[in-house]
Picture 1: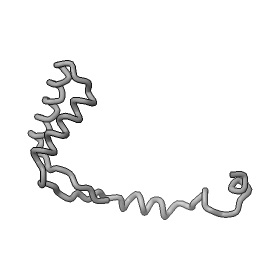
Picture 2: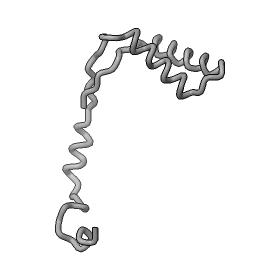
Picture 3: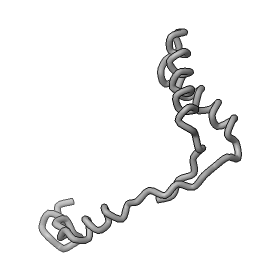
Picture 4: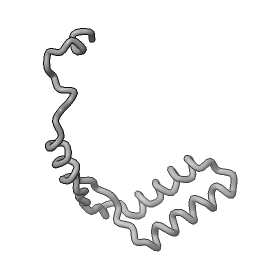
Length: 81
C-alpha cells in the first residue's frame, strides 16, 4: 500500500501535539483542534510529500495459506440471501 503524507520530524510531531493541547485548553474541542493543526501542517508542508510503503505482504501470505471457509460456492446459506 502506498500513501502520500507530509514528512514530519519527531520535534514537529511533538509541536503539533502541544499545539492541539494548547487549543483544547482554550476551550476548543479535540476534533476541531486536530483539524486546525492538521490544516496548519498541510499549509506548512504543501508540496512536501513523500511516498510511504506499508508492508502488507505478511497479511497476504497468511490469507493465501488459510482455506476460504466463506467462498462463493452454491451452498444453501448463499441461496437464502
